[in-house]
Each structure stands twice: as C-alpha cells, then as structure tokens.
Length: 392
Figure 1 (tube, rainbow, N blue to C red):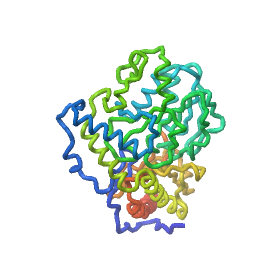
Figure 2: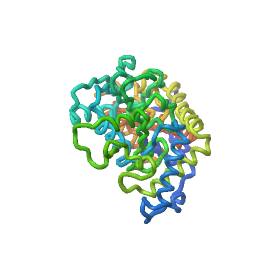
Figure 3: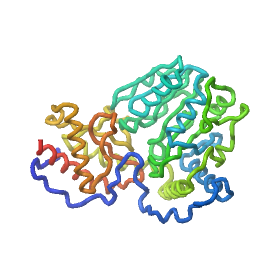
C-alpha cells in the first residue's frame, strides 16, 4: 500500500511534461506544434482539387491505420461522433426492431434519442450501471443493435467482438469514438462504426467519421424511413447511396486546418507501428495506472471486471472509508477539490469524472499520452488525496 502523509503532504518534485489528460479533446501526439498546420489549405475551397486530395488522403490513412476492409466505406461527416451516430439512427432505423445497449452516458443518450425522438415502437433496452456491462448474451441479433465499444464516461469496454455472430440478420451499429486507434475493434463484426478525431488521436473537433459495411449500404438503398431528414443526415438520393460522401466530397464545408491536423496525427500513428503500435502504447499507459491502483488503498478502477477495463478513458473511484462514509454530494465535492488542486499545480487538467458518472477521476491513457507522464502523475494523485483528506 502507498504510504501517504496525511497532513502537510510534501509536493512531488517532478511534474508531467504534458498535463493534458482530458478524455476529449485528448492530448496531441508527442512533439506536436502548430507548425504542422503551416501547409493547411486555408482560404481554398474544400471542393478544389488539392483540398479534395488532402481529404482523400485523410480517408486513405484511416483505412490504412484501422485496417478497414476494402469493401467498407469511410466518410467524413458533420457534427463530430454525435452527428455520425444521429445520421445512422435517423436514416436507417425503423426497418426492424432495435436492441439498445447502454452502460454509460453516451449509450444512454442514444437510447433516449431512439425512444423519445425517433419514437420507435419496437425497442428493447439492455442496460447496466456504471462499472458493469449488460448481459451481452441476451442481445437478439435478428434485430438492429446499438452499443458503444468503449464507455467513455464509465471506463468499461466490451472485451472483444466474439459475442456478435457473423450470420446476424440485423445491423450492428457501434459508437467507437474512444476505442478506435487504441483497442482491437473487430470491424467485420460491425456494420456501422462512428468516431471523432478529438478522442484517441487528439485531433480537433467538429467533424465525425462514419464507416459503413456493404450490409449497411444495402439498408440505406432499400429502406426509406417515414420521417423527414435534414440535409446533413441524407446519405441517399433517388434510392442510391450518395457515393461522393465516401470519396472526399463532404456534405458541408470542412475545416482544412482540421484535415491537416488529423493527417499529421495519423502519419505519426503509422510511424509508431500503425494500429498495433498505437494499441501497445495505450495498453502500456493503462498499465501504469493499473499498477498504481493495485498498490494504492484509497483508489479503485470503476470497471468491476478486469477484462472490461478501458485502456483509454480510465475511470477511478475513491474508496477510502473516510470518503465513502460521506454523502454522495460531499464525495463529489471531495473529488472536485482534488481535481482543482492538480489543475492549480499545472499537473493534470480536466481529469474529473464525467458529470453524469459516479464521483471520482477520469484519466486519459490513449496512445498520444506518454507513459512517463502517467508515472509522474501518480505521486501527485496521492498528494492531492492526502491534502484533501487532511482538510476534512
């Protein structure tokens, strides 16, 4: 167990070189500077030949790094991961019943959208509390299925894709925004994958990525929802896929600064060993925190089953008896004071638990973070805890 001085705790003598441990937008890749954007085609039409070539290059790098099957399509769409998911829900749903899986905030949000906004009649909810997964064996794959691969706000991920059959009748729709580029996401088990660059790669916000299997394209071309669709949700015209969306012809104006930034991030990803290299970095980062948790008695991983613990959005609970004896409101206030202390010391920014999650910490361990910075962070976590506990 860690020996923590409980009064007048001594400040650790080394700070992380990069204190950006936010879970989105997350840290830029090591060595990043604004100079990487110097050649961005600002002031040019995104439909000009050179600009479209850069957009296509970003799509090609996505296919290379994520090892996307050749017959899957990749498009850049408006409004981040949220926009990508909403495009799918509004364009594809209603053809058959839907199983909605939720074990954290974003998954719960999709449940709300399908039931209260789309108002679909045949919806089953399979839910679990923070720290747990719902019963994956209860999922009915004759229906469409929606789930998050990694629960960004709970730190709980599905262990693999083995629970998804290859011969499913419905579509599998996966919000993978904090999983891709860091976890082994089995794309062949998925018909729709969505994510955004600001998570995992440290890219800038505003745009989302949508990956479609041939089965998803078939659904788009054979099913017409009985609801009006805004322009930014429309992926077909005259019953045919608007293929340009998946060839760099974005639905609306795209930021060429964002494109240049994500190209830089993905080229760095290639340089550190591609997908396997990125996954290994995230695993090594998460291990630093896991080892610290194992030897520290006041903290625990929110994920209850070790095989489901995230290697990106690591969510931690304060389990010291003196703190758990407090009211829920006071526990949340204690955690917030710890986070504030670390922010003031320029040690760790934005590591508080998500607003809907249990009180605690959430520390990003994706591949753009350096393990050495996490090693320097853990003594500061002990320090902040000791300071706040002594003040009770």
